[in-house]
Image (tube, rainbow over all chains, first blue to last red; front, side, top):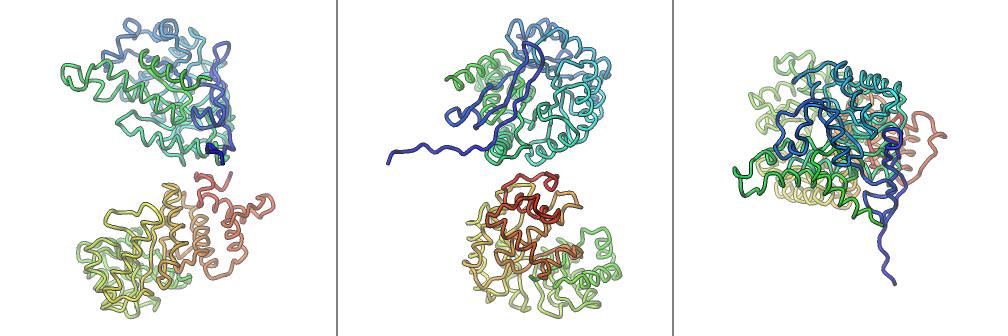
Length: 315
Length: 292
């Protein structure tokens, strides 16, 4: 008897969603198989990388992370343009770090103006990420949604505690939402149900399972994402058939390991290479787990991951 | 189905202070209410009771026996308190529980024999929670062997396979069911019990009964002998007493692979079917599992 390669029986499909608008809009999702299992099904759209931009100059970035953005970190518009023009970014993620109530605590109006400027200056899809402070995100992201009507931004994180108010604004001004839960599949499903009950259309939801980097519990993130894909693709669980977004760069670049200078710990190798590899490898793990959009920082880390994606999706 | 009422519990806002102050009224009211609700045993949960646990347990046993002659389940991890409770109990008491840690076995197995009690054998090993059905089976056999050495008859052992919340790790729940299906072959004379409300830990309070009831019915299919339950869930008690054969039948049919068309069922029946699906892991649990 001839050997037959065992094949997973898929019964579901990840929903396709369109991010951004115009020529540079990006479609993600649509998988009918586990991530990159092209021998078992289809992955019509490759995973995408969104380059990170901050709305204020970073104070504590490792030198290796700052170097590629020298001269633009005090101007989000210039920073965003550099990502696109110099590093070929297909998507951007504007992190509204300045709105953190425990930091600069910049007001909603001012923060939204900055988002608007960036959104007007670029044509690629723009993710706008708050600080996960329920009250502040509600204020800021509602304003952002209103001011940037027509841009189809991706705004988040929406959590159980603020999903109604931000969700309502997203519906009203037609922005996609990031449904965010703390590494828990049951809670993730629940939030997706709640957003559906609120009236957010399926094609305007992308799910953030909450991620951490290698050495800091990425195994748990992997398991939860893997389990989501199993439920969505093999158990017809419609509430877990959403594309996934992973905001990994800030996790990788805040670790102790990327901040230790080469000379302080020669055994750990070159500090720059260390940070780049930590980010790239963490991102790759998340893609293998099912990540559809990965937020990344360092151009060289992005290049490494894009090469991997190209190889793994080659026909 | 033998029902053990769980409500007389030191974690309760009324019972906790009453136990600490030795105030009999709330304790007796609760015991009477549980007896009237129709449970067979009243669980007296005094917690770890590290300080003067023996006094507390003897007092609560006597206090409860003053108002009801229901059998008692003595629930503490303090062996000295356990012995004081056994001494004070009039009928055949149930020790809740003895796990497989060597010191617990050494201190508490002799009490079962000495006081002619029954015991709940909690399948919690030296390494903690068993990981699957086979580890549960190993622990069960080990426990039977050690109990037998201590002169305890198998029918006095109520095996507790440890029921875990549906919202935590579904594979643990599956393992618990798988083990329960094996138990009658491994230990035909042993009895069994579960802490039923564990399955709905973390679920919004008003929805917990659906999980508890459905889970009990599902375990009944595997011959569950008893369960530690919320004495005030009258629907659950009614099911356990055999008054809802059509619901039991429906749940068992779904477990056997029947897929009834939800639209053809009553709202109540559909809730049971949806709940079976989350407990078996066929559908992933979320707090809105009854709505989708």
